[in-house]
Image 1 (cartoon, rainbow, N blue to C red):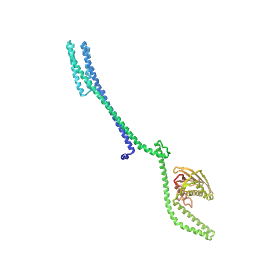
Image 2: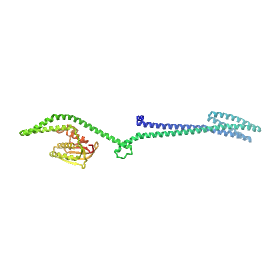
Image 3: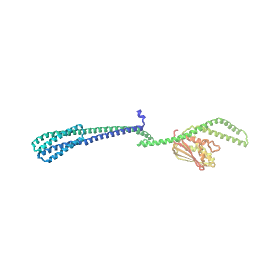
Image 4: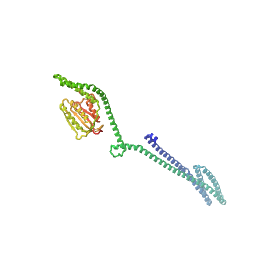
Amino acid sequence: MKLTSRVGLSSRIIIHLALLSLIILIMGIVSIWQTMSSQGIINELIINDMAAKSAALEMQSALANHKGYATYYYLDSDPKWLHELSHYRKAFDDWLEKALSVDKDPDHVALFAQIRSKNREYIRMKDDVIRLYEGENRALGESRHWEVRELFFELNALVNEYNVRIEKKISGIMDASQKKTIRANYMVVSFLATSLILVAVFGILLVLQVIGPIRRIAGLTSTDQGDEKSQNEVTALGRRFQNLVSDIESSRKELTHSKTLLMHSEKMALVGNLATEVAHSIRNPMTSINMRLFSLQRNLEMNEKQQEDLSVVAEEMRRLDNILRNFLEFSRPHKLKKQYVDIAGIVNMTIDLLRYRLEGSGVEAVQEMQDGLPFVPADAELIKEVFVNLIINACEAMVDGGRIIISGYKSFAEEIGPVVRIAIADNGPGISEEAANLIMEPFYTTKPEGTGLGLFTAARIVNEHGGAMTFESTEGGGTTFFVTLPIVRDI
């Protein structure tokens, strides 16, 4: 088990495929070898042994005719029988030479020598009988004829013995060929069985280590498709991979966003330390100054010029206190008190709060809220502070008055999901391209008396809620700020 765990999946598949291919290759080689071996036996049987068998039969036939034509000549002394006799003698010798050329078996060669010797003796004695017949000594020729018959039977017995031997050899070759065929069949069956076992093992390996994991991974997609399981694991796996790539891309964007927040947090920490020191160093003297100013305004009799100067001092002190509060707000992390709130209701409260400010600036506020907006998890006071900041900025931008349209609607953000989006649009002068790149940065402001922390603080509040604050602006064509808040988020 430890050994297989060290071998990669692709290596194990390659090993099994190589082993299976090797078995099939060996099976093919052995089959070819068996076929060639059987073919060699068949060739030997056809080319040599069958030729020897044919020669033996032809020798027996020639020998029988040899005997018969001599008898015919004895009966009618016709010379044509002698001519036929010489023909079959030659045929016997030719077939004997044919048998010698195809059969090199030592025992058979020795037998061929006996047949040749016996045949020469038979021909010699047969010729003596024929000469007696030709010399009109037929009685002696007839007597010798019976002696020749005995020699004929001996010669015929030798030829027959060779015929029996060659038949036994052919039978033995056929038996050997049959045994080879049976053995080859057994080997092929064994190889096939082995191949089937290897195929089964290979199939189990694929199921356990390839198809099984693919199905398990594909099963994870069931959460995206309800309880119904996909019948195509590869499609499900591909869908899961696409979702994974999408999640990675989303995580990358969130990481980039978190990096930006971290950089701002470092700035906030630095300014926080400074603001704390400023608060301890300035707050107490400012409190004393404010108390003395209040006392002077009540107890001193001052002319108009002195009262004006004292009012300017008090106003500047209030501005310093406002700056100090902005620094403290910037440096202090918010402790969100989330609950599901009606965002449209918060917009109404904000407009009511700023009604006199709007009227004093000659600005008309118009609401265009979508019906049935869902509640969102948020800190109502902090979100109201965001809306206050954006509406006041719009009022200050429209120095000659104008119109603010506040719209709310349900939407979907790729990085967040289902959201409620609040758009605050003015018809002011817009934001220049240079300012648009810096307006969300801390300490950047276009106002003579601004601190540059209002928009940054508002954006930070929205981000802490898991949302986003963006804007669109055309120089000379107004500005629209978008506050995007998630609908579903753990409180």
